[in-house]
Length: 165
Image (tube, rainbow, N blue to C red):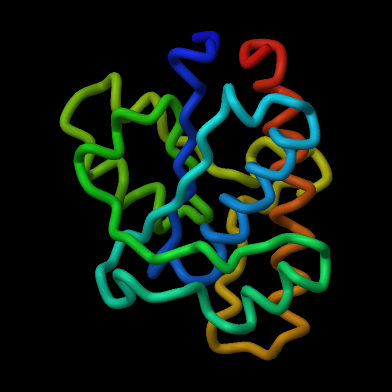
């Protein structure tokens, strides 16, 4: 599928509560599109499998890690993944537990086929498929997770960019 100004390519990143990993991925991917001059052709959003944090800002440690790397995550508000989110072109899970949940929620093969693991796009991940949840860790883990997300997001963007252009 290719993107156009009328029909941008839509990617949703999914983690557990939509306050740590998936907001990072959303912001990083949006920045990659902006830097490539394709921000009008790409829509990057995020959601959580759970509803615990709906309406909340991203975790303060997420926002701080993003800011340290020059990103702005201040507009983020957590939301829960719904069946309507399968209208996105690509549904990117941050770990295999999210992937399993999303697969169980997909009602059609077309929806299931849209689900991918973020780290599966990154050859630098060396077979690691799960972005660890930094929620119960310190700020340094948020920085480490952001680095993983940046690397995998760059690899994903490189793969999608020809279709988006």
